[in-house]
Length: 204
Ligand SMILES: C[S@@+](CC[C@H](N)C(=O)[O-])C[C@H]1O[C@@H](n2cnc3c(N)ncnc32)[C@H](O)[C@@H]1O
Image (cartoon, rainbow, N blue to C red; front, side, top):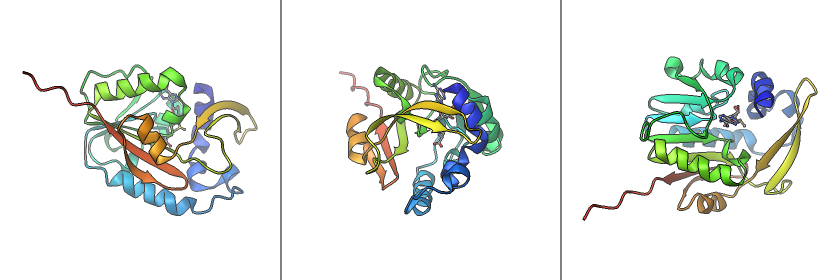
């Protein structure tokens, strides 16, 4: 995965922009919904936020408040650094997160949760809710031409082919999976769900 994302970094935003290899894809309503998604991210209350697996920072730059971007890929972070005010980026792994308990108000993550398999998901959510009070997950909406879970073969501009595990979600499905999540966006292409850390029991 690291080699794939390092190689993909310079062309990653072509997926969002519908250019390069994505120019020929028929994606009705994609650009309109992407604008809606960006507006929904920008409408989150300002908070100290850790964007886990921030990639190029395409969505990160919509977040309000002091934002730190974390990613395993140096090539992704080179691009994200220019987009995050103050250039606060950390190269590291999402599980475990290299931060103390309660370091942030919020963990945000885009198009990362859906790449996690089995127990990795639970470990990631537990880590996110250890370092912050809430987790906001953006991911890909279930599409008629995709299964909910796929082993994909992806081709980059240089012709190299990479195996990628990928899931697609409905808003309700992701909210249920995240145990009590609140659906913030549920379109044709994207979902966004917020889940809060369980509040600690009042002392007797
Ligand atoms: C599909 S991209 C998503 C980028 C961005 N968040 C977005 O929504 O467009 C997935 C990102 O996850 C990063 N990544 C994958 N596994 C990771 C891990 N274990 N720890 C940190 N970053 C990881 C990759 O380097 C890549 O930048």
